[in-house]
Amino acid sequence: MVAASDTAELQEKIKALKARRKAILLVHNYQRPEVQDIADLRGDSLELSMKASETDAEVIVFCGVHFMAETASILCPEKKVLLPVLGAGCPMADMITAEQLRKKKQEMPDAVVVSYVNTTAEVKAESDICCTSANAVQVANSVDPQLPIFMTPDRNLARYTKRHTGRNIRWWDGYCPIHDNLTAEQVQGVKAAYPEALFVAHPECRPEVLDLAEEVKSTSGMISLAVNSKHGQFIIGTETGILYPLSQAAPDKQFIPADPRMVCPDMKKTGLRDVLRALETLAPEVKVPEEIGKKAKKAVDRMLAVPRG
Image (tube, rainbow, N blue to C red):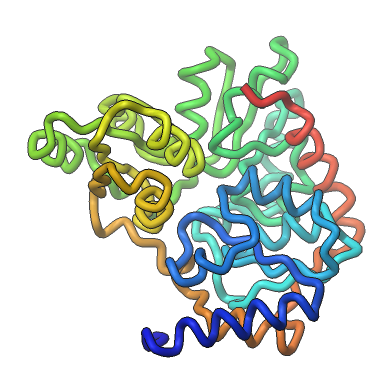
């Protein structure tokens, strides 16, 4: 933990070294508040993936988890991509391997493989197109309607996508432990305590939880909704790190966690000292092998080409 008295000093050191390194800091909405405060760009997976491909920085410091840094490396192979804590991973991404997906493709040779960005580069390389929680419906609708779809790795996002597209979708039985642990009973209890609040859920939640939601949004979608909605109270069904940018974006509104225990340990691994050390040493670097990167980039590029709706 960083003492409050040290935070400002560390942040200033990072800013100065970042300028010398010609680096840019990409920070996911679930990261620690003090890390979010020094972000050049803060957002969700879709936004950060797109920004990673557009930046002219020589070094990308990705404050998130491993698959996000891999995506930046895929889109920017000429840049040095740093993940301050190499052990910051994603349990859901680890639920499927490239070998498992290749076997599944043999069983379903006609299916179009749509992989959530919460997957390894090797899995992306075996996929036809990627998606995020923000654009999964649009991506599925972009697929030839005559073809079946196989979605990896999140069963909840796949069920949500199937419901909102009516497409022939099957899925890998993976899930985000943080979102999947939220129950309908918990949500009903919070809604009873805050009857005027709007319940906003992430599509990684279970179907019965999404059934209770007035809105289903990605993290950045939640922020946009909070800013533009006339509602003053929101129950938030996602990782609690989002409460910080929500409170910054709409300080006059109240945000209640659907479950305060929805904390992703991996998203909280990165601290200011880790960011500073990464800039000092230009390590740990995440570099996707060229052959895998080229194949994975095709799937990511197809995703980025789908119109956002």
